[in-house]
Length: 192
Figure 1: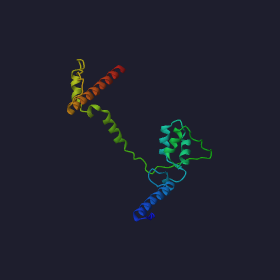
Figure 2: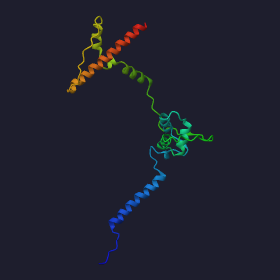
Figure 3: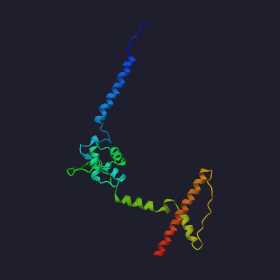
Figure 4: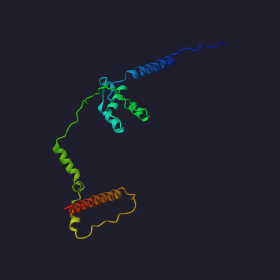
């Protein structure tokens, strides 16, 4: 019997074309890179993102910002490559004296809120008595000031009921807030 020579059919040609397309695209994009939000290609060559420098300097406070900027500029702004170089023990190279780092200016400036809103939100956050509606308990505690503060015996177990657990945790939270207030008042009286 004569052996048939392999022939190229349409499905194999389409598969070859698709695979070739993705391989070429991968090779071309690997060198060029896409200018996405996390890419260093969106900045001019030679500038360093201050957020990246800050990120690395928080992880490795023993390194100088100048060394970090030099390494980021050399590797195209890759935080992962700089971190890997530090973690493998190779360390960072000392930048040459001619290296003058250019720091990229962030596009969006942080929005500052008016100071009046900040002070009122801080005042609300600090007043736990009004935040958790503990006025009634505080007044009841103040009216019984002559007697010793009552510490309710807490149950030693975790209830199966969600509502019961929530009630117990809220009660414990309220007791902790009031106990902290009592301690603060005692410290203030002792200081005076």
